[in-house]
Length: 390
Image (cartoon, rainbow, N blue to C red; front, top):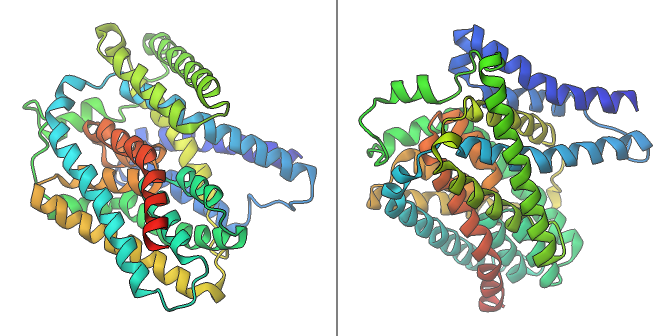
Protein backbone atom coordinates (compact mmCIF):
# COMPACT_ATOMS: atom_id res chain seq x y z
CA UNK A 1 0.00 0.00 0.00
CA UNK A 2 2.89 2.37 0.72
CA UNK A 3 4.16 1.88 -2.84
CA UNK A 4 0.77 2.89 -4.24
CA UNK A 5 0.74 6.19 -2.35
CA UNK A 6 4.41 6.77 -3.19
CA UNK A 7 3.75 6.45 -6.94
CA UNK A 8 0.73 8.76 -6.70
CA UNK A 9 2.96 11.30 -4.95
CA UNK A 10 5.53 10.91 -7.74
CA UNK A 11 2.85 11.61 -10.36
CA UNK A 12 2.45 15.03 -8.72
CA UNK A 13 6.11 15.63 -7.82
CA UNK A 14 7.58 14.82 -11.25
CA UNK A 15 5.79 17.74 -12.99
CA UNK A 16 7.10 20.09 -10.28
CA UNK A 17 10.65 18.88 -10.96
CA UNK A 18 10.12 19.18 -14.73
CA UNK A 19 8.92 22.78 -14.32
CA UNK A 20 11.94 23.64 -12.18
CA UNK A 21 14.26 22.07 -14.76
CA UNK A 22 12.47 24.00 -17.52
CA UNK A 23 13.09 27.26 -15.65
CA UNK A 24 16.78 26.54 -15.03
CA UNK A 25 18.18 24.76 -18.11
CA UNK A 26 18.00 25.67 -21.78
CA UNK A 27 18.25 22.02 -22.88
CA UNK A 28 15.00 21.27 -21.05
CA UNK A 29 13.36 24.21 -22.80
CA UNK A 30 14.35 22.67 -26.12
CA UNK A 31 12.93 19.29 -25.15
CA UNK A 32 9.69 20.72 -23.76
CA UNK A 33 7.85 19.96 -20.55
CA UNK A 34 5.22 17.68 -22.13
CA UNK A 35 7.82 15.55 -23.91
CA UNK A 36 9.74 15.22 -20.65
CA UNK A 37 6.58 14.17 -18.81
CA UNK A 38 5.77 11.52 -21.41
CA UNK A 39 9.36 10.27 -21.30
CA UNK A 40 9.23 9.81 -17.52
CA UNK A 41 5.89 8.04 -17.81
CA UNK A 42 7.22 5.63 -20.43
CA UNK A 43 10.21 4.86 -18.24
CA UNK A 44 7.80 4.06 -15.40
CA UNK A 45 5.86 1.75 -17.74
CA UNK A 46 8.81 -0.06 -19.34
CA UNK A 47 10.56 -0.70 -16.02
CA UNK A 48 7.39 -2.14 -14.49
CA UNK A 49 7.66 0.39 -11.66
CA UNK A 50 3.94 1.18 -11.72
CA UNK A 51 2.73 -2.40 -12.04
CA UNK A 52 0.97 -4.21 -9.20
CA UNK A 53 -0.35 -7.69 -8.62
CA UNK A 54 -4.00 -7.17 -9.72
CA UNK A 55 -5.27 -9.40 -6.90
CA UNK A 56 -3.94 -7.15 -4.12
CA UNK A 57 -5.70 -4.36 -2.27
CA UNK A 58 -2.82 -2.04 -3.18
CA UNK A 59 -3.59 -2.52 -6.87
CA UNK A 60 -7.23 -1.58 -6.38
CA UNK A 61 -6.31 1.49 -4.34
CA UNK A 62 -3.66 2.61 -6.83
CA UNK A 63 -5.94 2.10 -9.85
CA UNK A 64 -8.75 4.05 -8.18
CA UNK A 65 -6.53 6.98 -7.19
CA UNK A 66 -4.88 7.08 -10.62
CA UNK A 67 -8.24 7.08 -12.41
CA UNK A 68 -9.50 9.88 -10.16
CA UNK A 69 -6.49 12.07 -10.86
CA UNK A 70 -6.75 11.45 -14.62
CA UNK A 71 -10.47 12.26 -14.64
CA UNK A 72 -9.91 15.55 -12.79
CA UNK A 73 -6.60 16.83 -14.20
CA UNK A 74 -7.69 17.76 -17.72
CA UNK A 75 -11.13 19.20 -16.78
CA UNK A 76 -9.29 21.51 -14.35
CA UNK A 77 -6.59 22.32 -16.90
CA UNK A 78 -8.90 23.29 -19.77
CA UNK A 79 -10.43 26.38 -18.08
CA UNK A 80 -7.07 27.51 -16.73
CA UNK A 81 -5.56 27.32 -20.22
CA UNK A 82 -8.54 29.03 -21.84
CA UNK A 83 -9.03 31.93 -19.41
CA UNK A 84 -6.41 34.20 -20.95
CA UNK A 85 -7.17 33.30 -24.58
CA UNK A 86 -8.61 36.06 -26.74
CA UNK A 87 -11.51 34.37 -28.54
CA UNK A 88 -12.24 37.42 -30.62
CA UNK A 89 -9.10 36.42 -32.47
CA UNK A 90 -10.22 32.78 -32.70
CA UNK A 91 -13.30 33.72 -34.73
CA UNK A 92 -10.91 34.64 -37.54
CA UNK A 93 -9.71 31.04 -37.58
CA UNK A 94 -13.24 29.54 -37.62
CA UNK A 95 -13.38 28.85 -41.39
CA UNK A 96 -10.06 26.99 -41.31
CA UNK A 97 -11.18 25.06 -38.23
CA UNK A 98 -14.32 23.92 -40.08
CA UNK A 99 -12.27 22.89 -43.10
CA UNK A 100 -9.92 20.87 -40.93
CA UNK A 101 -12.80 19.25 -39.02
CA UNK A 102 -14.72 18.25 -42.14
CA UNK A 103 -11.54 17.01 -43.81
CA UNK A 104 -10.68 14.89 -40.79
CA UNK A 105 -14.13 13.31 -40.54
CA UNK A 106 -14.28 12.55 -44.27
CA UNK A 107 -10.76 11.10 -44.16
CA UNK A 108 -11.66 8.68 -41.35
CA UNK A 109 -14.84 7.48 -43.08
CA UNK A 110 -13.04 6.95 -46.40
CA UNK A 111 -10.15 5.14 -44.69
CA UNK A 112 -12.50 2.83 -42.78
CA UNK A 113 -14.69 1.95 -45.79
CA UNK A 114 -11.71 1.37 -48.11
CA UNK A 115 -9.98 -0.72 -45.44
CA UNK A 116 -13.13 -2.80 -44.98
CA UNK A 117 -13.13 -3.84 -48.62
CA UNK A 118 -9.37 -4.45 -48.68
CA UNK A 119 -9.47 -6.75 -45.62
CA UNK A 120 -12.99 -8.15 -46.07
CA UNK A 121 -11.79 -11.66 -46.94
CA UNK A 122 -9.26 -11.98 -44.10
CA UNK A 123 -11.57 -13.61 -41.56
CA UNK A 124 -11.92 -10.65 -39.17
CA UNK A 125 -14.85 -11.43 -36.84
CA UNK A 126 -17.78 -8.98 -36.80
CA UNK A 127 -15.89 -6.89 -39.31
CA UNK A 128 -18.63 -4.35 -40.00
CA UNK A 129 -18.85 -3.70 -36.25
CA UNK A 130 -15.06 -3.45 -35.96
CA UNK A 131 -15.19 -0.86 -38.78
CA UNK A 132 -17.91 1.00 -36.87
CA UNK A 133 -15.84 1.06 -33.67
CA UNK A 134 -12.78 2.32 -35.55
CA UNK A 135 -14.91 5.11 -37.02
CA UNK A 136 -16.08 6.01 -33.53
CA UNK A 137 -12.69 5.94 -31.83
CA UNK A 138 -11.01 8.00 -34.56
CA UNK A 139 -13.69 10.68 -34.48
CA UNK A 140 -14.29 10.89 -30.74
CA UNK A 141 -12.04 8.63 -28.71
CA UNK A 142 -12.68 5.62 -26.49
CA UNK A 143 -16.01 6.97 -25.26
CA UNK A 144 -17.52 6.50 -28.72
CA UNK A 145 -15.66 3.20 -29.11
CA UNK A 146 -17.24 1.80 -25.94
CA UNK A 147 -20.66 3.22 -26.80
CA UNK A 148 -20.60 1.58 -30.23
CA UNK A 149 -19.30 -1.71 -28.86
CA UNK A 150 -22.13 -1.85 -26.33
CA UNK A 151 -24.89 -0.68 -28.67
CA UNK A 152 -23.85 -3.07 -31.45
CA UNK A 153 -23.35 -6.02 -29.09
CA UNK A 154 -19.71 -6.61 -30.07
CA UNK A 155 -17.93 -9.57 -28.48
CA UNK A 156 -15.79 -8.40 -25.53
CA UNK A 157 -12.74 -10.28 -26.81
CA UNK A 158 -13.01 -8.59 -30.20
CA UNK A 159 -13.31 -5.21 -28.52
CA UNK A 160 -10.22 -5.88 -26.39
CA UNK A 161 -8.14 -6.92 -29.40
CA UNK A 162 -9.18 -3.90 -31.48
CA UNK A 163 -8.51 -1.50 -28.60
CA UNK A 164 -5.10 -3.07 -27.90
CA UNK A 165 -3.98 -2.64 -31.52
CA UNK A 166 -5.42 0.87 -31.62
CA UNK A 167 -3.44 1.90 -28.53
CA UNK A 168 -0.18 0.32 -29.69
CA UNK A 169 -0.38 1.88 -33.16
CA UNK A 170 -1.81 5.27 -32.19
CA UNK A 171 0.39 5.94 -29.16
CA UNK A 172 3.68 6.18 -31.13
CA UNK A 173 1.99 8.55 -33.60
CA UNK A 174 0.84 10.83 -30.77
CA UNK A 175 4.28 10.65 -29.15
CA UNK A 176 5.76 11.58 -32.54
CA UNK A 177 3.48 14.62 -32.76
CA UNK A 178 4.22 15.80 -29.22
CA UNK A 179 7.91 14.95 -29.48
CA UNK A 180 8.52 17.32 -32.41
CA UNK A 181 6.59 15.88 -35.36
CA UNK A 182 4.56 19.08 -35.46
CA UNK A 183 7.70 20.83 -36.74
CA UNK A 184 7.58 18.63 -39.85
CA UNK A 185 3.97 19.59 -40.53
CA UNK A 186 4.81 23.26 -40.00
CA UNK A 187 7.18 22.88 -42.95
CA UNK A 188 4.74 20.86 -45.06
CA UNK A 189 1.78 23.14 -44.26
CA UNK A 190 3.52 26.53 -43.92
CA UNK A 191 0.39 28.65 -43.90
CA UNK A 192 0.01 31.76 -41.77
CA UNK A 193 -1.87 31.45 -38.52
CA UNK A 194 -4.78 33.81 -39.14
CA UNK A 195 -5.12 34.62 -35.43
CA UNK A 196 -1.84 36.53 -35.29
CA UNK A 197 -2.01 40.12 -34.22
CA UNK A 198 1.26 41.40 -35.54
CA UNK A 199 3.58 39.89 -32.94
CA UNK A 200 6.26 37.44 -33.87
CA UNK A 201 6.13 33.79 -32.84
CA UNK A 202 9.13 34.32 -30.56
CA UNK A 203 7.32 37.08 -28.70
CA UNK A 204 4.23 34.95 -28.26
CA UNK A 205 6.23 31.98 -27.00
CA UNK A 206 8.35 33.96 -24.59
CA UNK A 207 5.57 36.09 -23.10
CA UNK A 208 2.42 33.98 -23.29
CA UNK A 209 3.37 30.31 -23.11
CA UNK A 210 5.00 28.37 -20.27
CA UNK A 211 6.63 31.30 -18.54
CA UNK A 212 6.93 29.67 -15.11
CA UNK A 213 9.20 32.29 -13.57
CA UNK A 214 7.65 33.90 -10.52
CA UNK A 215 4.73 31.50 -10.72
CA UNK A 216 4.57 30.84 -6.97
CA UNK A 217 5.36 34.34 -5.76
CA UNK A 218 2.88 36.25 -3.58
CA UNK A 219 2.21 38.50 -6.55
CA UNK A 220 0.71 35.66 -8.62
CA UNK A 221 -0.55 33.03 -6.17
CA UNK A 222 -3.77 34.91 -5.38
CA UNK A 223 -4.73 35.21 -9.03
CA UNK A 224 -3.92 31.56 -9.71
CA UNK A 225 -6.08 30.46 -6.77
CA UNK A 226 -8.99 32.50 -8.16
CA UNK A 227 -8.50 30.79 -11.53
CA UNK A 228 -8.33 27.37 -9.88
CA UNK A 229 -11.46 28.13 -7.89
CA UNK A 230 -13.34 29.05 -11.06
CA UNK A 231 -12.12 25.84 -12.70
CA UNK A 232 -13.40 23.76 -9.78
CA UNK A 233 -16.78 25.54 -9.94
CA UNK A 234 -17.02 24.91 -13.70
CA UNK A 235 -16.13 21.25 -13.17
CA UNK A 236 -18.85 20.98 -10.53
CA UNK A 237 -21.40 22.55 -12.87
CA UNK A 238 -20.35 20.17 -15.66
CA UNK A 239 -20.69 17.12 -13.42
CA UNK A 240 -24.06 18.33 -12.15
CA UNK A 241 -25.41 18.85 -15.66
CA UNK A 242 -24.06 15.47 -16.80
CA UNK A 243 -25.83 13.71 -13.92
CA UNK A 244 -29.01 15.70 -14.52
CA UNK A 245 -29.12 15.12 -18.28
CA UNK A 246 -27.68 11.61 -18.67
CA UNK A 247 -27.71 10.17 -15.15
CA UNK A 248 -23.98 9.41 -15.52
CA UNK A 249 -20.62 11.22 -15.46
CA UNK A 250 -20.88 11.78 -19.21
CA UNK A 251 -17.53 13.12 -20.41
CA UNK A 252 -19.04 14.86 -23.45
CA UNK A 253 -21.45 16.91 -21.33
CA UNK A 254 -18.78 17.71 -18.73
CA UNK A 255 -16.14 18.91 -21.21
CA UNK A 256 -18.67 20.80 -23.32
CA UNK A 257 -19.96 22.59 -20.21
CA UNK A 258 -16.47 23.40 -18.92
CA UNK A 259 -15.31 24.69 -22.30
CA UNK A 260 -18.41 26.84 -22.81
CA UNK A 261 -18.21 28.41 -19.35
CA UNK A 262 -14.46 29.00 -19.76
CA UNK A 263 -14.95 30.76 -23.08
CA UNK A 264 -17.66 32.98 -21.60
CA UNK A 265 -15.42 33.80 -18.62
CA UNK A 266 -12.52 34.72 -20.90
CA UNK A 267 -14.52 37.65 -22.31
CA UNK A 268 -14.26 39.33 -18.90
CA UNK A 269 -11.03 41.29 -18.77
CA UNK A 270 -10.36 40.57 -15.10
CA UNK A 271 -10.55 36.81 -15.76
CA UNK A 272 -8.47 37.06 -18.93
CA UNK A 273 -5.76 38.93 -17.03
CA UNK A 274 -5.47 36.48 -14.13
CA UNK A 275 -1.73 35.73 -13.86
CA UNK A 276 -0.12 32.38 -14.68
CA UNK A 277 -3.38 30.47 -15.23
CA UNK A 278 -2.02 28.91 -18.42
CA UNK A 279 1.05 27.69 -16.55
CA UNK A 280 -1.08 26.27 -13.73
CA UNK A 281 -3.17 24.49 -16.33
CA UNK A 282 0.03 23.07 -17.83
CA UNK A 283 0.95 21.70 -14.41
CA UNK A 284 -2.23 19.60 -14.43
CA UNK A 285 -1.54 18.58 -18.03
CA UNK A 286 1.94 17.39 -17.04
CA UNK A 287 0.40 15.23 -14.30
CA UNK A 288 -2.01 13.78 -16.86
CA UNK A 289 0.84 13.21 -19.34
CA UNK A 290 3.00 11.29 -16.87
CA UNK A 291 0.09 9.05 -15.92
CA UNK A 292 -1.07 8.38 -19.51
CA UNK A 293 2.46 7.49 -20.63
CA UNK A 294 2.88 5.16 -17.65
CA UNK A 295 -0.13 3.16 -18.92
CA UNK A 296 1.66 2.21 -22.13
CA UNK A 297 1.88 -1.59 -22.45
CA UNK A 298 3.90 -2.87 -25.39
CA UNK A 299 2.95 -6.47 -24.57
CA UNK A 300 -0.80 -5.93 -24.85
CA UNK A 301 -1.15 -7.01 -28.48
CA UNK A 302 -2.40 -10.48 -29.42
CA UNK A 303 -0.17 -11.57 -32.30
CA UNK A 304 -2.79 -14.03 -33.52
CA UNK A 305 -5.06 -11.18 -34.58
CA UNK A 306 -2.68 -9.66 -37.09
CA UNK A 307 -5.40 -8.82 -39.63
CA UNK A 308 -7.19 -6.61 -37.14
CA UNK A 309 -3.87 -4.88 -36.51
CA UNK A 310 -3.35 -4.46 -40.26
CA UNK A 311 -6.81 -2.94 -40.62
CA UNK A 312 -6.22 -0.54 -37.72
CA UNK A 313 -2.86 0.41 -39.23
CA UNK A 314 -4.49 1.08 -42.60
CA UNK A 315 -7.13 3.32 -41.03
CA UNK A 316 -4.68 5.47 -39.06
CA UNK A 317 -2.22 5.89 -41.96
CA UNK A 318 -4.79 6.45 -44.70
CA UNK A 319 -6.92 8.83 -42.62
CA UNK A 320 -3.83 10.89 -41.73
CA UNK A 321 -2.71 11.05 -45.36
CA UNK A 322 -6.15 12.01 -46.67
CA UNK A 323 -6.59 14.59 -43.92
CA UNK A 324 -3.19 16.07 -44.74
CA UNK A 325 -4.07 16.33 -48.45
CA UNK A 326 -7.36 18.00 -47.59
CA UNK A 327 -5.62 20.51 -45.31
CA UNK A 328 -3.01 21.19 -47.99
CA UNK A 329 -5.75 22.04 -50.48
CA UNK A 330 -7.59 24.20 -47.95
CA UNK A 331 -4.32 25.88 -46.84
CA UNK A 332 -4.77 24.88 -43.20
CA UNK A 333 -1.72 25.58 -41.02
CA UNK A 334 0.50 22.76 -39.76
CA UNK A 335 -0.37 23.42 -36.12
CA UNK A 336 -4.11 23.31 -36.79
CA UNK A 337 -3.68 20.06 -38.72
CA UNK A 338 -1.78 18.54 -35.78
CA UNK A 339 -4.33 19.48 -33.12
CA UNK A 340 -7.11 18.26 -35.43
CA UNK A 341 -5.41 14.89 -35.76
CA UNK A 342 -4.92 14.49 -32.03
CA UNK A 343 -8.43 15.74 -31.23
CA UNK A 344 -10.05 13.25 -33.60
CA UNK A 345 -7.77 10.29 -32.90
CA UNK A 346 -7.61 10.69 -29.12
CA UNK A 347 -10.34 13.15 -28.01
CA UNK A 348 -10.13 16.71 -26.54
CA UNK A 349 -8.16 15.86 -23.35
CA UNK A 350 -5.09 15.15 -25.49
CA UNK A 351 -5.17 18.54 -27.22
CA UNK A 352 -3.70 20.63 -24.36
CA UNK A 353 -0.54 18.46 -24.07
CA UNK A 354 0.15 18.96 -27.79
CA UNK A 355 -0.60 22.68 -27.56
CA UNK A 356 1.85 22.90 -24.67
CA UNK A 357 4.51 21.07 -26.67
CA UNK A 358 3.95 23.31 -29.71
CA UNK A 359 3.85 26.43 -27.52
CA UNK A 360 0.97 27.75 -29.60
CA UNK A 361 -2.15 28.25 -27.51
CA UNK A 362 -3.85 30.00 -30.44
CA UNK A 363 -5.00 26.61 -31.73
CA UNK A 364 -6.16 25.29 -28.33
CA UNK A 365 -9.84 26.18 -28.71
CA UNK A 366 -9.87 24.97 -32.34
CA UNK A 367 -8.56 21.57 -31.26
CA UNK A 368 -11.04 21.27 -28.40
CA UNK A 369 -13.98 22.27 -30.63
CA UNK A 370 -12.95 19.71 -33.26
CA UNK A 371 -12.69 17.03 -30.60
CA UNK A 372 -16.08 17.93 -29.12
CA UNK A 373 -17.78 17.78 -32.51
CA UNK A 374 -16.06 14.43 -33.04
CA UNK A 375 -17.53 13.26 -29.73
CA UNK A 376 -20.97 14.38 -30.86
CA UNK A 377 -21.00 12.81 -34.35
CA UNK A 378 -18.66 9.83 -33.90
CA UNK A 379 -21.26 7.41 -32.54
CA UNK A 380 -23.73 8.33 -35.28
CA UNK A 381 -21.09 7.85 -37.97
CA UNK A 382 -20.13 4.50 -36.45
CA UNK A 383 -23.71 3.21 -36.46
CA UNK A 384 -24.12 4.38 -40.05
CA UNK A 385 -20.95 2.52 -41.06
CA UNK A 386 -22.07 -0.66 -39.26
CA UNK A 387 -25.37 -0.79 -41.13
CA UNK A 388 -23.87 0.37 -44.43
CA UNK A 389 -21.24 -2.39 -44.40
CA UNK A 390 -23.44 -5.00 -42.73
